Every structure is written in C-alpha cells, then in structure tokens.
Image (tube, rainbow, N blue to C red; front, side, top):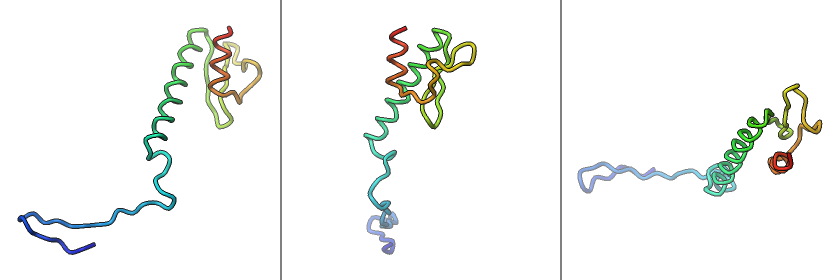
Amino acid sequence: MSPPRQEDGIPHTRGIVAIPLGGARREETWSGADEEKTVKLKGRSLQRRARARGIELRHSASGYALIDARRKAVLDRHDMTLDEVEAWLERG
C-alpha cells in the first residue's frame, strides 16, 4: 500500500484488491446469480404445484424426487431434473 496522502484534509490510502486465480468465482458474476435465482424460483414453483396435488418435491445431491402420500417415490426415481419434474406434473 502507498502511504496516506492528505491533499484536501481527508486521509486517503490506496490499496490493491486481490482477484482470485481464474477471475471471479461463478457465484460472484451476474450471470451466475441469475442462473441460481432462476433455478431457485423454478424449484419453488414446482414445489407449490406438487403440494397442490398431494405430492412432495424433495432435492438431494443426486437430483429431485417426487414423493407421494405413501412415502414412495413417483416413478421410483430420485435423480430427476427440474425439467423432468415439470413435464411429469404437466402430464398428470
């Protein structure tokens, strides 16, 4: 850092902001934030639609699952994408 300067009576200091290797992380970019928001809003919308039909939408590391009232996975799948969940909800 350079030493403080006092040209107008207010002390100023200059510093260098460190940038991570490879540039900004994905979550720090506008496009990354927009993608995350879109996925979050779509998931919540599908969760409301599923609840209206008496089904629960669950998320895990392997994907999404629709769970019926008997606590059984719809289509015996626990690895659905949001697009597949949406298509299944539109069909039924």
